[in-house]
Image (cartoon, rainbow, N blue to C red):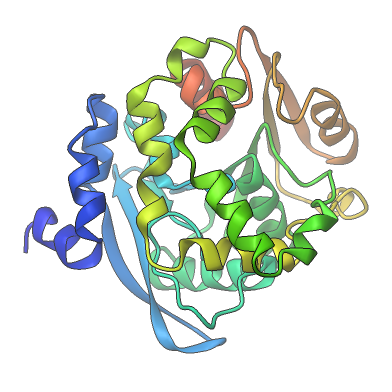
Length: 304
């Protein structure tokens, strides 16, 4: 079965149609490499069809974790550099991206972590270099603290994990939850957020917007987002960071307008074996804005 027939059977036609608008080669290549695998988890009897891609062969493997309301396409520009030296796995976290959602499922940090562990156990089964961007950084921290045997090294890219999730998320009852997600669905809103994430706003072009919006047409997208927000999302791991034993690297854009600069210094202060690197002329997404520079920092750290 070709990748086209696999995607046609697993994704709504509207996503396939809109993917035709992709123009950047890295976006097209990664979309074409998306696969699905059923992952069994303890909190639902039905396997979760999980979207992922794997590129490269060299060990140790790398896992990339995307940010809030994003997808694996977020790493389209970083993967080509990393995969020359490592086997790179990228997947859509439970409740996000193209991974299938179930209407009655709980979407919370605990179920996300459990699903990620089952994916690792099913597909990889080797200690990995775990890389998380923004909310994916909080996911990576949570995973590393819970399953330390699975993580060889930890990399945080303008990471969450030091700020509390807005309490308003717990009150996203209908119709407020629906209205909030419809606000996020608006392409003008997403474009504005994208522009804020970059230092060079020209990089927030049409291809970037298409990548950021493709997963919005997945079934139960809004219900999963509301459920995750009502769970409280990721809290602050400050009191637990001192227990991280893995060598860690924090990469941070000097012009991050989403999280600011204070969390970067806090990670440096609280994680025992951590190196902080600042990326010049870069906003919240160094893996998208400065992919070659970011990959060089990661590869140097991986080979140390």
